[in-house]
Image (cartoon, helix red, strand yellow):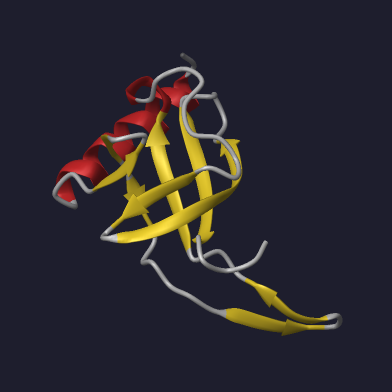
Length: 107
């Protein structure tokens, strides 16, 4: 793990603690995460309305199983069901990002 990865992971652990260890549920198991405030909305662009991300989760890769959650699967956060529309990694490959939208909305 390089210096940047260590710093991101250390900071994420501190945020988890300060936020009271929030979790999302995927495949019947809870995983600690850090997230933005869950929202729901659309933005008006040149081609019409586009859905914005309702929820972005930041999860330490070490707490997830391999392969872990993937795009088009669903998870639950704060009692709401979300569809994973994009999975990414922060620099250093130690933090997984899950960009999610309301599971009942179209893709």
